Image (cartoon, rainbow, N blue to C red; front, side, top):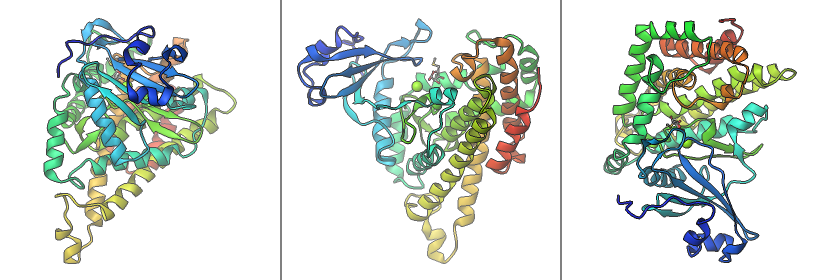
Amino acid sequence: MENANYTALTPETLSTRLGALPAVTERIGSDSSNWQVKEVGDGNLNLVFIVQSEQGSIIVKQALPYVRLVGDSWPLPLYRAYFEYHALTRQAARDPGSVPEVYHFDEEQALIVMEFLSPHVILRNKLIAGEKVDGLGQFCGKHCARMAFRGSELSMKSADKKADVGLFAGNVEIPAITEGLVFTDPYFDAEMNNYTPGLEPVIKDLRDNVELKRMAQVMLMKFASNTETMVHGDLHSGSIMATDTEIRVIDPEFAQYAPMGFDIGMLTANYLMAYFSQPAHRDSDLDSYQDWILSVITETWSSFEAEFRHLWNTERTGMLFPKSLFEDQGHSSASACDGVLANIWQDALRFCGIEMHRRCLSLAHNADFETIEDTTVRAPLEARNLHMGAELVLNTDTLKDASALTALARTINARNIL
Ligand code: SR1
Ligand code: MG
């Protein structure tokens, strides 16, 4: 990939630079003097522009050659836009309607022109504001199951899947962010770490726990070497946009082939962080809103399992668990499916616990906690979150299903740790 002529867009230059693109003019017209351009990127990495005219609106997302959150002292390859583009096309094929439509991709300029989702807002903001989204659990569970199943050799031809693993293996520096920030940095005094004052004793306990650190590295080994399916790679509540009834997944630039439990584990972690942070965000409807978040977790998992079983029975055309070994010989493959789901559940719980740790201990925290300005309020809530994370990594075997998971969350939510 060659980016010799790359130049970052600005609101002032965007109309001149993209004004002749049919993919753009078809949607917002060719009179760029009527366009309104706003840079709205609030993530950690990229430029994001909303471009609007009377005729319509589009999003232009462009990678920067460095980590926006940190600055140009941390260079980051522009090629992540290439992987985001390829991930978006696969997501659209594997779960139609779940992601924004791509209108145009420019590899050299590392930019994607895509559908502007409106009136959707970032799910994390809705969770902080105490807003509900109908069907959230059903959508997310089904989406994760479709992505897990249809990107694996349960479904894909082996040659196609292996070619895809090869393609995404070129995405090196982006997974490296996850490998460091998620799996390793929380468990030692890494340079870019930060944490809320008051958490010191809890952090010391985590770092003194050799079994916890061993398990985090076991999960890193799985993440880095197990290519079961194409994962989004960064599926948190900031990577989901929603109205009160409609949901889409965005931002798959961290896509890679990885364990099937990774995305649903990360997502569950972000629901749990929304749950544990709620006491600082509301009073009167606290219990009912926390109950709703836990119900979303339960529905996400039941919908995941139902969809996965459905695809197992109707789309199992890959080399794994072939019908020739089961149904064609008059044998049920239901217990084999149960076993695959049990492995996904266990992996997901451990990925979940580790993600709950990193968002309070390393770089790039969650707004769920970060928006709690009073650190004497924030620290005890984060302490519950850190304890829950450790339980999920260490006592995975005791948690048989989502109701055990949500019961544990309720127990820890009632603990006074600091
Ligand atoms: C340096 S990037 C930090 C985080 O931002 C992204 O959204 C990912 O979550 C990454 O871990
Ligand atoms: Mg992102």
